Image (cartoon, rainbow, N blue to C red; front, side, top):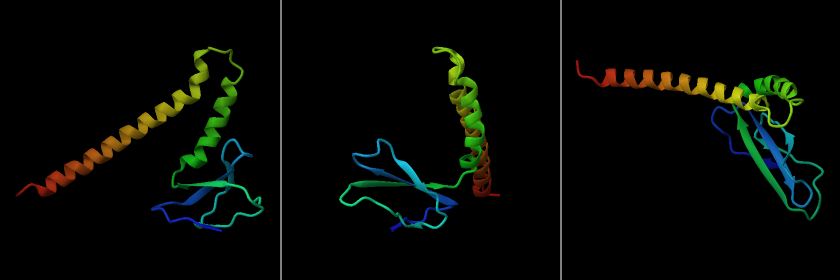
Length: 120
């Protein structure tokens, strides 16, 4: 059993394990909502790496729904075609929108803070 420290605003956690010498990449083993997680059927005398990520984003739900079809569309394109990068371009556009929203939010908060500090 592993105990994961609670993360602020985490809705659930993703737990990955990698058995050294067996797994090349970490393998997802669960998505508990409770930070106490039990790993079962582990090999004896093996080195096991565990990693945990806290998820508090809607993108964990939306990304597979949008990403898989987009990858399917570009998977048949010939090597070197610029459209193969469409999933990355899409992600860059989403990040640009997120940056714009954050910029507006923190700018508004800063203006409100400065207005409150101004003597009347």
